[in-house]
Length: 214
Image 1 (cartoon, rainbow, N blue to C red):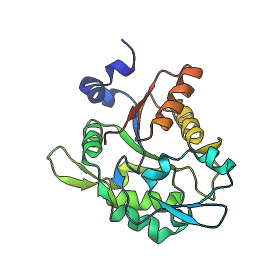
Image 2: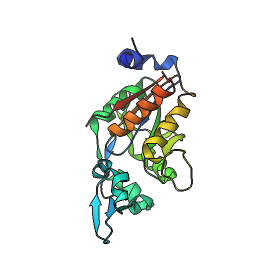
Image 3: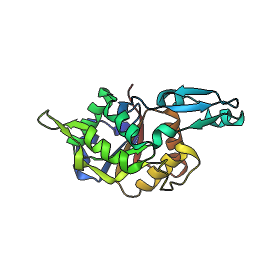
């Protein structure tokens, strides 16, 4: 039986015996953000507004070869970034999955393609809630450790890698040395496949990438 095949209720419940980490993407995994966009700029100066989900479907390298550029200005505005989460629509199916892990002793981390890492850490501590063992909603608060919040496009930090997919994979590669087991949940198949390729290339057995529920 492979590691991936045993990611079930028993596997989750045994986390207390191990150093286990649940690593979560944000956009379209935990929340459908509101009021924040990426701007696709054509060579003639015309702009097209893209939601984060629409941007995820773009083939950015090919578009840039055509002289098309992208502006991420909304994601560098602290107020817009915080408000986009606070007013966002929770994705209940994935939050229920998170509840199960937290109740069974897993540590929680965030791995997002956004920037403004400190802002993201603060807003997620306030916005993100889980159901405790009594079935009551509780802020994730201190359960979300600052050192486990990674916003890979933060302008003040340098995460190695070419592009978001490789940066995420490299962070997971590093974390795999620190934890007995990691489950990584992301809505983007390209992120999941890049991580799987990295795991296979480096013969890493203690990480399971999982596609988020829609």
